[in-house]
Length: 336
Ligand code: SF4
Ligand code: FES
Image (cartoon, rainbow, N blue to C red; front, side, top):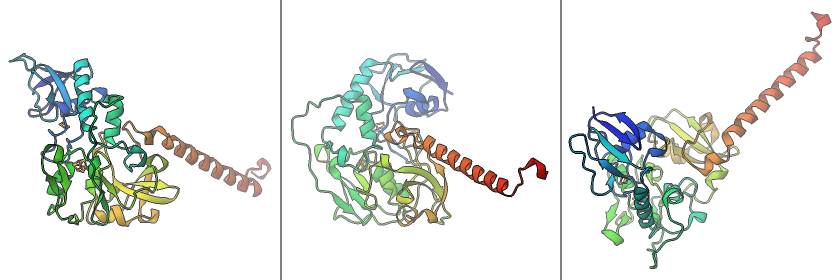
């Protein structure tokens, strides 16, 4: 099994492992960001270049460094390879350049975008971006399009990661949308605005790293940091039925698939669970979701508030029980 060292951490990995996967096995800050790679979908990666790393030693056999940064999601580990991510200032500078490119045509509409607060591009911009853009031309403009009655496409926010296209190809029986044209003219299109109408199409919303594909049943209902995510499940014959409910009080504003710490869906869910089950009584609620990812959602500490509330409720219940017992004289030592 080949050994690779990433930012000073050495790990032995199975043959064929990519640098990005090896970094995820190590975990922590050294894991490169990934805007197009999606471990749950085949042939993703290689489009966005955010995962670039510096290979300072090619392998034990051929120790020459690679001449330019490589996409870690597409580069396989070689035995003895040495990789730099956060320990290379040059590489971080190059990644800032990639982010600048991704933002060239991306509108600065975070204040009105439903994805704000859980947008991977927003996080990437904060962590790796520059304060100012050098771009002087007008950004591309598109009118929003309805893809069926449940999904809205804002093409101007799309970063051409291809995840939604791969998902439609691999998860649904037919795909009616794809990437049209090339370069600056590329756009996700459904040709004649065909509805993407099948049981698992809603997962496109979850894989989209930005706010280009949004849930029409949730749009403009709330900012995500005002809603509390809770894990829940129901018996479903189409999917696992394991979801995340986004609650405001007792109201279910949105249902999504559960995601792991890299923002990837754990189990795909069907459209019935996602769009049609919007009552708490439809679900068995398991408890507050722990959000691993750097996010404003976890910043509001709702998890600890929720546990505090559960504690207070428990103490209140105990107090009432004690009062009742006292009223019945059960706790009077003279009665024992
Ligand atoms: S719509 Fe979203 S998922 Fe599809 S290519 Fe654009 S950014 Fe990627
Ligand atoms: S995540 Fe590797 S190129 Fe996009």
